[in-house]
Each structure stands twice: as C-alpha cells, then as structure tokens.
Image 1 (tube, rainbow, N blue to C red):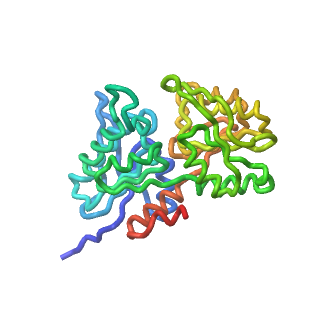
Image 2 (image 1 turned 30 degrees about the vertical axis):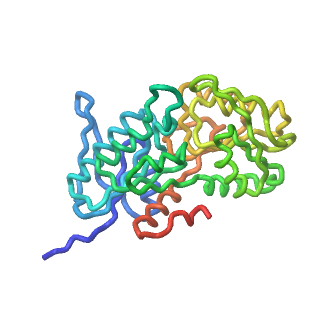
Image 3 (image 1 turned 180 degrees about the horizontal axis):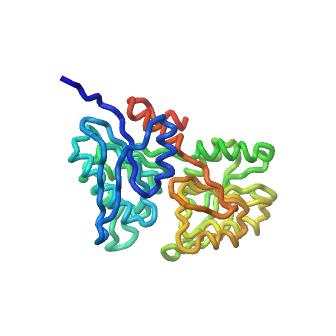
Length: 316
C-alpha cells in the first residue's frame, strides 16, 4: 500500500507573486499550483490543482492594497487547504494590514488587528509568519504560534555595502518615539549613533514634527520606520533634519505602502533616497526608491520552522 510523505508545499495568493517566486527559488522548490480568480459577480474563486492531503502547507499573501480583497483571498485559500486535508497551514503575511488599529485610541474604536487575527485563526491557519509588525503586542492577538521577523538585518547588510566609506557620518533617526526601539536595534546593528524626531499627531494620517533629539549636523541621516503610507511623517522629518544641518537625508522602511500621492510627495521632498523591501508589490517606482528583497529572510525562516529550528537566531 503506497504511503504519502508529509512534504512541504508552498503556495501564494495574488497580492505579491513576485516575492513568492523569489522565496520559492531560495528554498529550491516550485510554487504550488493554485489559481485564485474571480467569478463574474466579483466573488473569489480558489482552485488547488494538486494534492495537499497530509502535507505541511505554507501560503504567502501580503495585506497590501486592495487590502480587503487580499484578506478575503487568504481566508478562502486557508479554508480550501483545510477542507483538502492539509496536515498544517502556515500563513506567511509579509505585510500585516490593519496593524495600526491595535487598540482603542478613543471611545467606540474597533480593534481591527484583533478581529483579523480571529478570522485567520477560525479559517483554519495553524501558524503565522509576519515581518515587522507595527505593534509587537499583536502577536498576543493570535491563539496560534506567530513568528515576527525583523527586516533590520537585510537593511544593515545593504546599507553597509552602499555607505561603507561614509559609515562614520551615518546617524539613524527614529521618526517618532514609537519607532525608537526599532531604530535603536538598527543603529546598534550598523554601529552608528541614534537620533529621535519628536512628533505629534493632531489627526489621523496627519503628523507634525517638532524638533530633533540628537546631533545630525553635517551627518548622513537615515530615518528608519516600519511603514511608509502617505509619506507625511518622512517628508516633515526631512524638512526638520535639513533645517538642523543634515548633509544627506535617507529613509528606510520595511513596508512601502505608498498610498495616495505619497510617491509624488516624496519625490518633491528633501529626501535623497528611499530604501524599502518587497513586502508590498509595486510594478515600478521612480529612481529615488530602491527595493531590497526579503525573500532570503522569509525562505530561511520557513525552512527553520519546517525543521523545528530556531528562528530568533537569525537576528542575534
């Protein structure tokens, strides 16, 4: 009687097929045969064209715009794999949307990040793999194992290559107090000083930078954050850094959401270069933007999870 091996199978939704292909290539395997299309009325149609019975399935889907479409795609894919008798279903979410709705900032606010965690769990996911969650406490919203990867090793490797001769002039800048811990890790990895921008938020998607804490005069400043959405924080930060005497202004962010007129706003700003990863797919971007791939980081984490090896060792 034939015996079915418990193999690893890797699939992807439509949100970021390019990243999925790079991850599959790193792991030395092909992307699973799965079609995600639409019926004529707009409903999502998922077809898995190979057996997953008894296999460990990993499925990659980023919650980038259109966010709700991509969320629904993932939920339906999870359900399809569960009903096809997959042994386990790990979802790889490079960019976890709704992460900024992680608490009640004012009365009658929803906590949508928790709602999304519930939906993913109830759909049938057995594990979650993310990159740079906006708020680390979101890990506690899940009742299943979650691994939150950090992008700073990818950025530090690339930045040290590009600015090896000018490392002594580099200063990492946290664009607000909430980003200090993240920026501090990055500065420590690079071996350079840290500065902080004092920022206020008078309204949603509106930021006001007040002043700079730290020495940035005649320095190459590198603002480091997890998300570039409208670009307002970075642009205002760049203005303050310029007034404070910064020689060059760079920006790094894991998730380049770039909603609305963010690209044009950054193009017209004092920022000299923007470095992002490919957690959010963009067909093409202006020369001011440079994209680093996190495929090797995701691929290595998937391999380690599959083999029950440490993932945290990647960030020591």
